Amino acid sequence: MRGQPVPSQAGRCDQPPVTIHPEHPFLSPTEDRDPLRRLRARLATPVTIWTASTEAPDGRLVRTGFTVGSTTVADGDPAYVLGMIDPEADLWATVEVSGRFAVSVLHWVDRHLADVFAGIAPAPGGGFGIGTWLGTPCGPVLDGRTWVGCRLVESRPVGFGRLVTGAVDTFPEPCPDESLGNGDGYNAAARDCLWKAFSEGKAASFMTTRVTPDRDPIVTRVTVRPGGRVEVFYDSSLDTFSNTKGKYTLTCTKFQRSVDPVNGRVRFLVDNCRGGDIRALVI
Figure 1 (cartoon, one colour):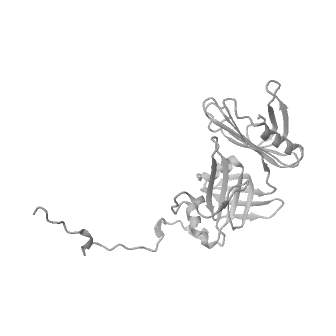
Figure 2 (figure 1 turned 90 degrees about the horizontal axis):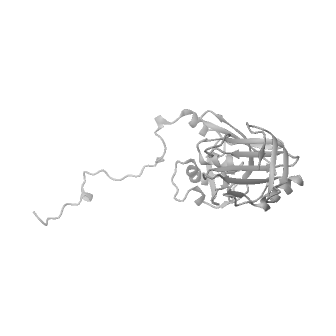
């Protein structure tokens, strides 16, 4: 009959009631869980969050983090921090560029934060929107927690992950970054900062990004250390027409400064480099 109201479905007794289950909504069923991962979870190792930060070509600060449950500290001079991370995580891409990372040791009350950075719990705005994070030269650290900053020493694939090793030492002074695009963006103060530290036997780092006419970024990070050792990270992986396309981590023993007679700009030459196919670079 027209105009007769339709009975509400909410009051029907044959509909199953809504229930809330205590299980974690993002965990795999028990029968699908990896026994090796379950073994690792039962080892008495504190959960940590590894973080790193760098500046994007457009000037934005990029912060990334990842939950690591396999952190180990090796005592020595310097001491080393080792951990297994996901090679496809955004963290590793940032560490490759910055050459540094920070490790925050979590407490039990931080277990939701650990799930967020592990990618198994949602967080509107991302993990850095939870708690208070302090900026350091190595990356963000969680306020009120034990943390350590490291410089990247080496990494290699192990199993399905990547074993990352960092040295705990005196942090290099972060000189300003430089972004060269279409001939502009030269930063004389940043280059003077790096050369001054090298001349005085101090540690400092400098990163320059050169943008090709095809808008492809080429990133070079130079770190000078006491004793004359120079470390270079060179990333031309996005350069379409590069003959040395790839990412290179180099250790060099020769570092020289010169001034272009035409425009008066400072150039650096790194030479006698090891760690890749590149033996010398003009920066």
